[in-house]
Structure formats: structure tokens, C-alpha cells
Image (cartoon, rainbow, N blue to C red):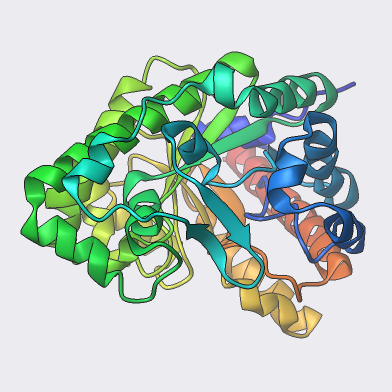
Length: 355
């Protein structure tokens, strides 16, 4: 079995013979076979069965030909170990039985016990480490995004309770950020120990904050997470979610390898705002997958042409796949990214060798 390390090389800003590609939420409801599994099992039930979770993780690698797998899991899984009861409700998302509303609620959160409470996730990673011929990306939800669910009790558009706690009780907020930061560090370290080859920190909703608030209330914990995990010899990705372009200048000193960008900021502008020290990942608008193929390929071409201007580019979406996406479209897009980028990079290499 030949191991495909193109994704790892791109994360490290090394030369590659083509642009690597993977998709956020690439194991999901766009796949008819996955939908059949979901008729029988809930997301959390799949996660608790390592062999099944590994199979679901492998499906898009086999069907789409992507250059990395991402663990089938959910960002809420580790909070169960803190003593938080939640469910993933269809067409709603995470719903918390008893939202955190005061300091006493936060004081009751336990330290995470990954091996004791989440051994099924580590077993899934170990299975995949043996099965895959591409790197396995594991992930965690970032503290602000997790906090927004814990405080609001369910997905929110305004995050008004979250911001109320942040602004009115900064000491209590800091205590919550510290506990969630510790959770993420312990969780991701266990992932790498079990065979994870890269990790991504998803901060899906942090774009709801003003840059000043992000830098004051959230960035110190994000920086601590990446600093404390800097000894791990795997690529580290921070994805600050959608509408986060104004936050990018605050990331310049982050000890990450890759910054994920949404479609509202161009790759070149994202590189400029973050200081040019990171590989970049992104940033096709997911809903372009509903466009005619010639439109989709033209937009992908534009992104590739911009991405390869500097070393370190991974093709991805600017957010996760949605259920209405087509498996055939994704397969054709993946092939196009590989074929077009290989052709362009080969031509550029020949030009350099001639000169």
C-alpha cells in the first residue's frame, strides 16, 4: 500500500506534485450509503461503535479519492466527559439538557477522562491508522464554539447569553475558557497518541465576535492550545469558521501550521492578513456545488491558480458539505483539482528547470 503524504507536505509548505484536497463534513448525508446507515443509527450511536465509525470515515476516501480522511465524530463528544448531558437533535443540532448559566455550573465541570469515557473514539482512530493510505485528520471544537452551545443550550444566531456572560462576568468566562482549553489539549493529545496524523481546531462561530473581543476573550486560550501542543510532530490547523476574515490579523503569532479560510476572503488576502507564515486551506463556497459543472470548475481553477502562487495550499470548502451536494459532483471536482493542479505545477517546474 503506497502512502499518500501530499496533504502533510502541503501543510508543511513543502513541494507537492498536485494540490491535495479534502472536504469538511466529507463523511455525511450527501452520500446515499451514509444515509442508509443513518436510518438505523444516530450520529452518537455511530461514534460509539469504532468499527462502524471507521467505516464511515473511510467511505469518502474510497469514493472521492481525497488526500486525507477526517475522523467521523462530533465536536460535542468530549463534553460528555465533563459531565454535560446533551443530544444531537435532527434538524436542530446539539441540545444541552442543563445549560451553563452561572459560576457554580462551570465549577461542576469535571476534567476530561479521554481513555475512561471516550475510549471508543481512540479505538476508531487506531483502526483507521492501520487501514488508511492517506493521513487521518482528527479534530476538536474550539472553546468559544463549545461554550456557545453549553451556555445557549442549542445553536444560536445571536449568542446573546454567551456574550452576556463574556462581557458581564469576565472572570467566570476566563474560568470556562481555561476548562475547555484543558479539555481540548488533553483530547487532541490523546488523538495523536492513538494514530491521528493531523488535527483541526474548529471555531465555527467565533466570527460572531468583533476583532477586539476575539483578541481579548478568546485568542489567549486558542494560543495556549497550540502552544501546549507544539511538541506534537503533526500538522495543526485552525479554522475560525465563517465570517471570520476580520479576525485573521490576530492570528499572526499562532503556533499552528495551517489556517482555514472561508469564501469571503481570498486566499492571497488571507495570507496577507495572517502574515504569510501559514499554509492556507479553502475556500470554495460549498453552494457552488449546486452550480453547473463548468461554473464549478472555473471557480475551482481560480482558487487553485491563486493558491499555488505560494507553497502550502490545500483545496477545501469554505465550510462543511451540505446534504444536497452530489456525490458525483464531488468526485468530478476532486478529479479536476488533482488533474488541473498537477498539469499546472508540472508546467511551472519545467519552466523553472529551463531557466
